[in-house]
Every structure is written in structure tokens, then in C-alpha cells.
Image (cartoon, rainbow over all chains, first blue to last red; front, side, top):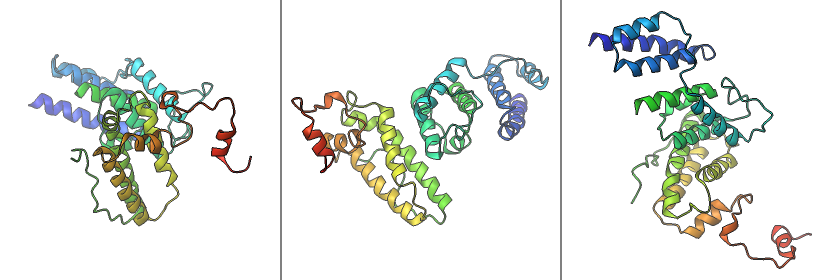
Length: 142
Length: 133
């Protein structure tokens, strides 16, 4: 199907920058997930043209309650005090987590959101925002 | 009656620290995924939560965090895998799990595990802690 291949090409194009530019583009990757989800119900060509326009006025695709749940889990896991600010862009290593802590956080998220994260996906999560985006993507798939 | 999740195996022969590291994380994830089944098997729902048990497991891993020899790491993973297999197959019993994992760290003393009343004197508590007090 040409439309499916076009959309998958879009995803591949978006996926490359999303793993390289971690600060700028998590929202971009999230937007891709939302548009793919809508594609099942709308005309694919219309959705793809909307994406290529580059007008990212939409807020982060990760829902705020997902993000807040992720923040709570990270906070309790790393035993952070309340005065330390926990922004979505803060890296786990900056918050004092070693690699085992990161894996443990991913497992806690797996249990909380009833998803299953692959090993290579888990290795690429370094910030709270990335975790929330991954959860959104897996929740959309399932 | 091994759980279908078990895939760690015993053919481990890590050539580098990085490979051993990957095996460690893979085993940690297997252990975490087995925790719900262990809670179910030994009826630990009133006693401890899943996330507390997960942090106990992580503490066990952290105790060996200083090891750098990949073959030693492989050996530790094999031993840990045997322990996990025993827990999953119900080869242990509830009091083993409670003693080794629920109460082990000292910080987790759930009130309904049944602590004996001391009658107002902390002599025994100090005695259990050390000889000199």
C-alpha cells in the first residue's frame, strides 16, 4: 500500500532525528505517534501533509497524567526530596541514578502501565520525557 | 515446573565486561518480571508490595556492584538464576522468602509479620544487634 509505505517512510525520517536530538525532538516523535494513531480513521495523505508542514503548535503528545505518574515513580524510586525540581527533561543520571536504577525505573513503569518494554528500547531511555513518550507509543500499539 | 519466562540458561561465557553487564540487566529484568508470580505463590500481598520487593532484589544486585571480572559476574548470575528458579518452582517455603527477602534488609519489618512483644525492655533488641552494649 503506497500510503502505508509513505507513512512508514515518514516515521523512519522522524525516528532518526528523535534519537539524535534528545532535547528538541521528543515532542516531534510524540506527534508522529499521534498522527499514526489517527491514520486508521482519517485519510492518510491528509495526515501526512499536515505532518510535513512542520507547524508543531500541538503540545507534547504524552498526556499530563502519564507524565505525572512517571515523575512520581521516578521520585519514589530515586528517593528524591520534594525541593528538588523534577522536569520532564531532567536526565536520570543527573538525578543520581546509576544504570541499575534506570532499569529498575523501567521495570516499575512496565508494572504500572502494564506494558512490555524491549531491551534495546529500555537502553535508550535517559529522561522522564522519553519514558512518557515510550509509554504513550506502547499504549497506542496495544 | 519452570516458568515459561525463564531464558537465562547456563551457557554464559562473557568475553567482556560489557557483555556481562548485558547479561546482568537481562537477568534483573527476568527477576523483576517474576516478582508478581512469587507474590502470588507465597501469598505475600499483605506483607510487602511489589515495588518494595523489587528494591530488595536491586539491593542484592548492588551488593555485587564492585565486581569487574566477567567470569565472576557470570558465576554470580548463574547462582542468582538458581535462586530465582528455586523461588519460582516453590522449592522454598514462605518463611524462607520472608526471612531472606522481606525482613532481610533490616529496614522492612512489617507490623503483621508477628514481632514478639518485648514487655517494655529493649535488652533483647540491643542483644540481637551486638555483643557490646
